[in-house]
Image 1 (cartoon, one colour):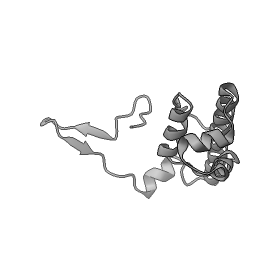
Image 2 (cartoon, one colour):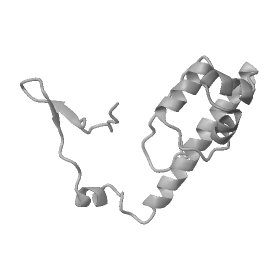
Image 3 (cartoon, helix red, strand yellow):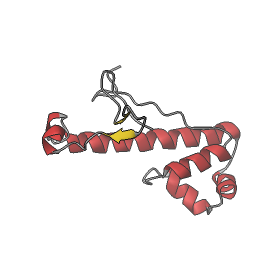
Length: 124
């Protein structure tokens, strides 16, 4: 998956021969220009991580309620202990894509992910 901002080229492009070419990695100057070295960057990162974890936790918990599935039953469905499900739902876990896919499949659905450009996620 490649995240593409409007008006910017993809990170990978094809040459005339049809082979993939990688764009050079951004150097430190490029990162400064992009705001990744700004004083608020670490704060924004922490806020985004916390909000994403909260969003995922809400979606899983909401789906459990709608399906009338207990945490113990989810644990059985995904092959982990009930304690592990409790850890996941407590919000402090750094879940992998595979874990999320397993949970979604066990609940009969999938996650729909959307990238929203911009610094303030609540401005819209």
